[in-house]
Image 1 (cartoon, helix red, strand yellow):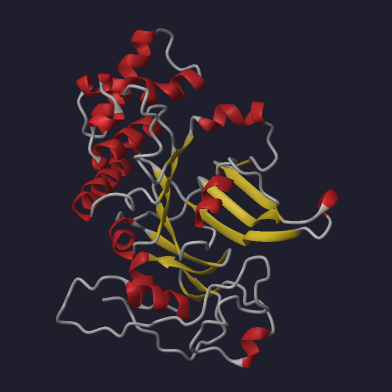
Image 2 (cartoon, rainbow, N blue to C red):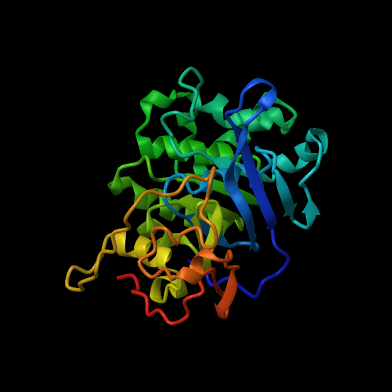
Length: 336
């Protein structure tokens, strides 16, 4: 993790973001329901910062990443990239900005076309954005991107099946970096890799951040990975943020019961220190019909009747530490 300086103008600023998907319905859409994948998110990411978004599967994390990049259209709210409101930009006006923000996919086995050489895969963003006057210019940029991620220029002529999972993810990183973006969304970048390879890719991403001055939104569920690479962590449950803080603060003193439960499930690197595992009961409620008040209350071991009344807003409980819980009296368990 880096020591992020005093906040400057955000690279990405999201305010009141909603993304709803229509579900079901009969003829002409009668009876159609709205699945609230994102239900009013606000956050900012500053230059050189890595913000990790964590939560259980189905919490809406990947939808946030794709909506922030305008790969999905927001239902409501605003998205600003480097100070410019991109919420309603047309495709033509958005296109010059695309080269500055890229996506690293979760599955390196599925995200690379098996019929294309690494050269063609990595060069494809250059062709899309018209970067490089000649094939030789583009090849030079491809080789430079491969070197950045620890691969050799001769790897450009190979096919994806000739690489290991970790090497394939390096190819995916090279493809994202070849246009020299300022901002990257990494969607579960190591979850499909063997544990022995995960640390290599995480360390590579940290090196690239420091070397290129990248800003990243990392979508993850492995809190061990998050704790190693993130400057701040945002915890998401059922389409809403329930806590956001600097990584050290959140791991040392969680202020939301859901965060406490996630941390208790993470592997403990010190076997001599005992930690109570908090097992959440019940299923995650449907985003088609979320609970009233606090969305986590139906599974929360500390819930009170008042938790059903109003939706708790994110509020500061310490400098830079925000939570959406009305229970200030709780002494929650730290990580580790």
